[in-house]
Length: 212
Length: 299
Image (tube, rainbow over all chains, first blue to last red; front, side, top):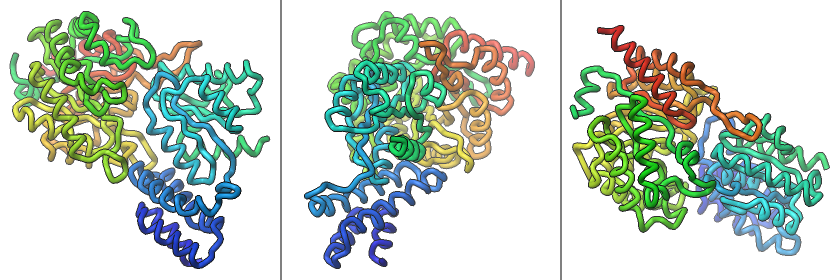
C-alpha cells in the first residue's frame, strides 16, 4: 500500500510530524494497525538499521528516525489497547552498575523496538539485583547489558552469577555489548551472546528467543 | 616557558601524558565514583599523578577535568561545583609541575546529544562549556584540550567556548574514530576531513585524534589528518583494545611496542604524541625516548 511505503520513507528521513500525520491517515483509511506497525514503522526502521550497519547512516540519523517511529507508535498504541502492541518478546536492557555511559545501550533499545521487541530500559548504573528482579517480575526472556568501561565490564559477570544462583540461568538469556567487551569475554563469564554492534545485537536476541 | 605554538611551529615534537582514570583507581577511586570527585578531596593524588608523568618526560600534563562540564557533572549531581572542580584540578597540576610542563585543561563530551537528534539546546551546551573553560582559564591553564569528541557540533561548541573565554590560550581538539570498510568515522558519522576542517574553522590551533584505537590504527588516522590540514597534529592512542586476563582487564600494547610506532607518527609529522586509555608513565617514558632519539637523529 502506497501510504505504508510513505510512512516508511518519512520515518527514514526522521520526520516525526509527517510520520504521525500519515499514521493517522492510514488508520482513517481503515488499514489494520498491525499492518501500519509492521509494513510502515518497523519496515522503515529496518531499513535505517541496515543503512546504519553498512555505515551509510550514523547515530544522529538513527536517533531522529527513532523519534519519528515513537511519534507513530504513540498513535497506534491506543488501538492495541486490549492486547498491547504485538511484540517479538520482552527484553530488559541496562548499562551495568558503576557505568553511566548509555549511548550504545540506548541505540540497542532503539533497534530492538524498531524490530518489534518490547523493551524495558532500566537506564544506567543498574545493579545486578535490579536486572534480575525486573526480568523475573516482568517475565522478560532476555537481559541485555552494556558497559563502556573496563572497570565496569566485570559487573556483567555478577548479573550472570546472580541468575545462576536464583536458578534462572537458561530461562532468562543474557547478551552483552559495549566497547571493551568481546565474544571471548562473553564466553568467559557465561553470557549467552555477544552483540558486536546494535544491529548484530538484535539478530542475536532474535536467535536467543528462537532457541527456546 | 616558551610559547607552545612557537615550539610546534619550529617543528619540535612534544610528549603529552597518559591515562589518568586507571591511576586514580589504583589510588582509591571506587567503581561508579566520578573521577572528578577527587578534585574536591584528593588534590594530593592529582599532584602525585602529574609528577609521575612529568618524571616520565611529558611536556604536557592534562588536568583531571575530562567530565567537568556542567552538563556532564549533572549526571552525578555535581553541576553546582563546576568552578571548584576545575580550579582545584588545575592548581594541583600546576603545583606539581610548576613551569616544567604545560598544564592542559581537559574537556570531554557532555554525554548528552544536541537537538534535533538529542534533547539539549545548543545554547545550553555552549553555556556548559563556557563555565568549564572560564574556570580552567582563570586557574591558569596553558592549553585547553577538547578531547574524545564524536559529534562535530559538540566539539566546535567546546572549541568556540574556549576561544570566547580566552582567545590567546591554544586549543587542541581531538575526536575519536572507528574504522569501517568505508573509512574512518566517529560514531556520529564525522570523517577525519570534516573533523580537521570543522575544528580549524571553530578556532582550534592543534587537531587530531585520541582514544578508541591502538597505535597502529592511529597511524592511519594521522595520515588522514596530514592530508587535510596544515595545523599541528596531536595523537593520543589507547594501549590497544582491552583484554580479560583472569579477573583483570589489561591493555595489550606494551610501552616498547607503542614507542616503536611513535617513530612512525613522528615521520608523518605528528607534533604532539601522548597516550589515552591503558597507557601509563612507563609508556610515556618510552615515548620520550623515541622522541629524543628522533631529535638526535635529525640534528
